[in-house]
Length: 201
Image 1 (cartoon, rainbow, N blue to C red):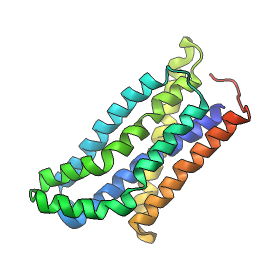
Image 2: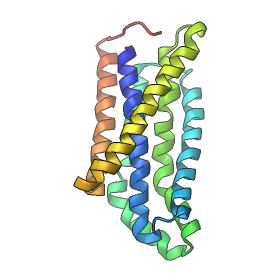
Image 3: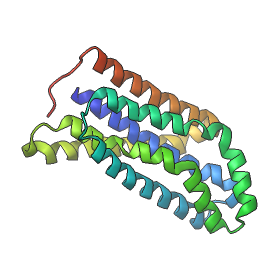
Image 4: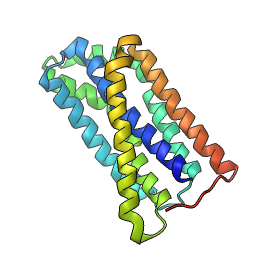
């Protein structure tokens, strides 16, 4: 189970940073790509992740399992996929309502990205809970897990900025990220169903 959890955490980190970069592309046609816009995006993502860490930590103490962990990925996918259809009309409405790029970009980032990012933020603390079985090794396990998750974030940033945005439309990338989350969910649920449990650390 250990390597499966690492894979799930890696994918979560990848998707989070890829989505954050796409946020800049979504907002740019309406509010530009100034420091105000990126400041709004980064603020919303950091706040959302902090809430996700808090909620995920609390939820992880209630009968933790791969089945429930897979559910986090399903909810994240369900909240992210509507961006394919609704991002454009939402951006148009916010742009007409709030002309100041500072507050308009902050409102748009909050409305579009906060909910899925909160859910994705639950992945890391839930991963730690599934892996840790002894207090003595909890620090080592958490450090290794956050290394893997952050590595996924770094690769998500690099691959999205260097390759994805050059070869695919934004909606196509969002669909790919959604499918990645659903695939990880299916993997976790299948492993839980068929009893693939290695020793946790």
